[in-house]
Amino acid sequence: MKNLFYILACILFLLVNQSCSEEKNKLKPNVLVLLADDMGYTDLYCFGGKANSPNLDNLAENGMKFTHFYSPAPNCSPSRTGLLTGRMPSRVGMYNYRANLHTMHLPNSEITIAELLKNEGYQTAHFGKWHLSCLPQDSNLNQPQPIDQGFDYSLGTENNAIPSHLNPTNFVRNGESVTETDGFSCQLVADEVKTWFNNFYRKEEPFFLYVAFHEVHSKIASPENMIQNYPHATKKDAEYFANVENMDYASGKILDELKSRGLLENTFVIFASDNGPYRNGSSGNLRGLKGEVYDGGIRVPGIVYWQGKIEGGQINETPAGLIDVLPTLAEACNFELPNDRKIDGTSLVPLFTNKQLERKTPLMWFFYRAYPEISMRIGDYILIGNALDSVPRTHPTADLDMDFIKNIQLKEFELYSVKNDPGQQNNLVESESEIFNKMKPRMIELLNEIKNDGPYWEGLFEYESIPSKFKKRYIRK
Image (tube, rainbow, N blue to C red):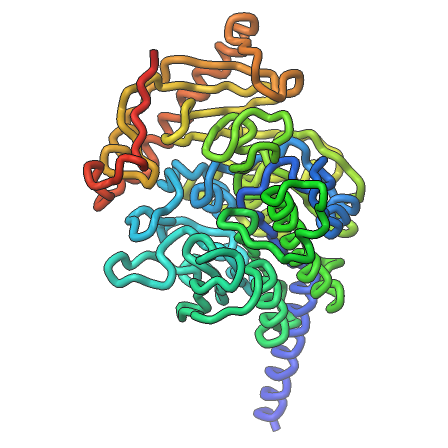
């Protein structure tokens, strides 16, 4: 009799414990990250663009639109690194986009959003562009795969959709190549999200979905019916606007899937682009394009939606960015940040209730391929640093690039008030010397930090082996 009582007590304890765990998980917000590729600050209609983007416009209307939102870097791989780790990409060692067969990758020692949320009982899935390591695994490189970085499920590509956004042939699902596809990349990604919900989603657990579209990175392919929506644009522009519209449509399908399941009301949603545009006309009056540390290369559209937590229709001018996503989720989802490394981002949660943001580490961008190479924002001011060197640099990061990265010294500076001068034309170094003298040592301090922290990659391409069109020799007069 005592044994029966003991067994029944144990069963009751397990049932109560499971019920409490399920209730606790229901209180945790789901997380959806929607990331565009190479989308400019003014491409979406709600940011002044010409493309139809009703779904993301609606998200902004019912959430918070950030008008000074930044990517962690001016190109692909380092930006994704900053998003997932909350750390400056160069501190992690992602100095540039990761070229095919390259030894540079997101180290397994880094802790990603997916790993942190997985430890909190979240289901985790990645869809779309990866660009942080080889994909699928290459035995000669042996680099961490999405599953090693915390993603239980993945359908993605190593880099861009090949041969274009239409019928791409380089998707990899959970380590296995998917050789045949039928459709546009963003729609394939959206459909895979639905497949994941139908086949793998567990209702009792919260989820983190990282959806990284290939659009609008070239080589572009867009639906003909959407191209026809822009009869007064040039053929090239019409195809580009249609590409934005197609990605918006795919975003809408994903949001509708959550809505139909009653999940959107408890989902934290963020939309942004991984960097500025390659297309002239997509960054408004901002200076620069993709690959530059002027605002045109790093300021991107930013939208955050969280029903019941963020009042809709807000426009926020506070400088913020994708590097802030990890610490924001730590506060929103109630988990601890890693304490054995520096997290450069700052939680944006105070902004959701109209409080001030206290940022300890300034937003900063170091990109060795650019001229100038470094930018830092504090308040309304951006300081730009130039090395004024004649060191050879390459597009895909070669052996000589590492020496430059580790030894760069800043020799010339530019200071801009981006609130009064968004085009960054009026250098204030002399007229605002007090501000300059405060920002300069902070920039140098942070640059020295990331030079010391970032790994020195071995086995890189040899400089002499790279075709001349992928080399640049910056000689300043």
